[in-house]
Image (tube, rainbow, N blue to C red; front, side):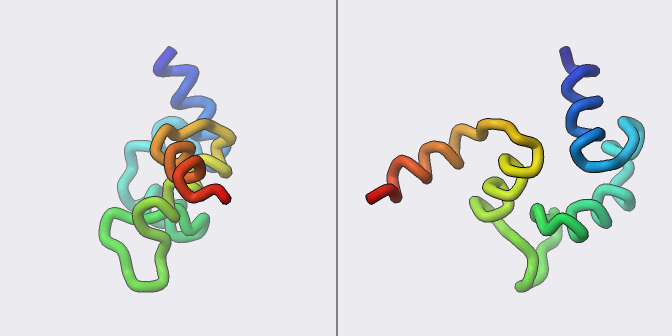
Length: 74
């Protein structure tokens, strides 16, 4: 299952599975897609904002994103 997950994420990000563990490539991908970086600058997505973007980009459910949505509805 882990290999399938890696292939899915790599496909969504437009990189190879090997690139997922390449910190230089992933730094560029995260910056280009504005999905948060390990070392953030003031204009980069951080925290829950980055998680919202990741959930949307990968078309997956992320528990804390769903919880945030529930708590802030209405």
